[in-house]
Image (tube, rainbow, N blue to C red; front, side, top):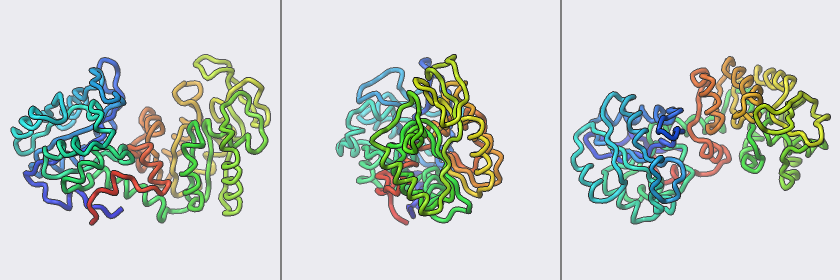
Length: 394
């Protein structure tokens, strides 16, 4: 991961194309509900301002499928960035073409412009070489600061790097250093807590990280598959039957490696995964027919908290229940609070886990909160991220 960064290249008074990740949640009226990803890019942008660079930002927002969708324009992100920087950020209505080139030609030292949503162009996700070349014509240097998109082989992530000197931004550098450190030499004991809906999406991570951890804690919807593999009934909970053999092998491997594998001891079950549904706490041996697992129970919260309390490093990815519904969020909230109070290195693996921590106001209590859910998972699986591979080596 020894990649050159924006500080290893001369950017003074140069035109710099910066790929950021402004894929932030917005209300229909354009109000941004969580600006974490915008704030995360501030160190790189402020460094470039101080270097009097002429800054051309580009990002995607959601999935417009190659068409212009009015409510997915990036103007609200430009407005929020302007507020944070306390300086104007011009937003353009296109990404490439004569109007964009003219606007960029008029930039003065330290000026910032934000291109329109990259995914309004089908060529972006297709990694079209012509589109990448047209983007690259806008700048002298390319900086990738969009860790959350580095696992995508898109034109603005890998294509542009074929035409411009390409380096990492300060956020990307920090993400790579922090997450790679987990796989290298973490302070021990080292625990990993994994939740979320499906084993399939986390299997690569589980297999890769198992030999490196002391404890593995499993919650969320995926716990149903683990419990079924051990012979427990899970009511009407979703089970990945095609993952049962993989789970059994993981459990066997954990035993052979001396890794403590903690599964739920009790559960909050509901008649339906809907707000206001009837719920009750049951042991894992007594999940009623027709009921669904909605969260971990109080004994599990206590056991998980006790296990984490003795750890020096903890990585957490995936809610431990259906966090979006308040009555099913106690497990996730309780463990987030437990992590916030640990005297340990605590790393949150992006995505919905980061959103939960942010919503609770605990981001500053964690050692690091990643901005990339899918990207962090792929990195910890041992995969080479396309957006990192194309950057210049030190």
